[in-house]
Image (cartoon, rainbow, N blue to C red; front, side, top):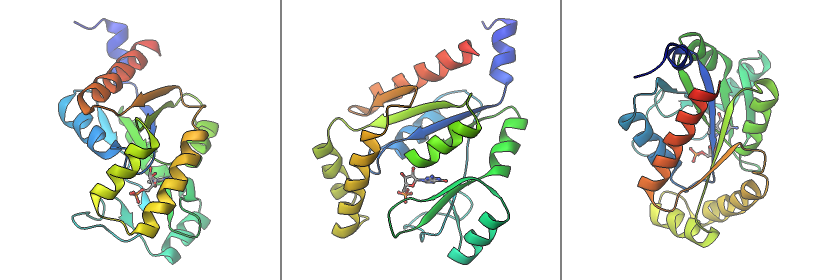
Length: 200
Ligand code: 5GP
């Protein structure tokens, strides 16, 4: 049973920012959160200039844009935040409209973005909920990235350096979930959402 005020809260749109180093298992965790819970979640589909990995679909995993198109949209102010995620690499950004439409429809919109992007969202939307998904250790993260087999060694090294920077600057997140064991991490994430839905 939910009380009337809890119901009102559940129907209220929210912004939930989830970050964590590449390879930490955010994708799997979020997929399970979406599939196995009844929160009114919707995933913000970001735009990126990187090419699709095997199996990734335009408009589902990302909006895959050319650099030119991305920069033109940025110029027009279409992004809530946008960053070059790996130095010298690709651009990633959250579209204003995606977030606004979801919140206006009463959805809890999940932004899976990097730490710089998260900081920038919190400046603009201070009431956003922020969760950092951490690996059990940096060595375990490298093992997972290597096991995934989708990036070159150079790319893995770049992502590992980025991971350390992200972990070092993750103090501002409201919640930290260590993805040691998937079921346990999922439960912790669900508890965060339950707590947030009661709090405001
Ligand atoms: P991947 O290329 O592995 O899909 O994502 C690489 C990194 O980009 C991840 O850390 C992911 O969280 C981040 N990212 C994805 N979309 C966005 C976005 O819209 N904005 C920002 N700032 N980072 C993003």
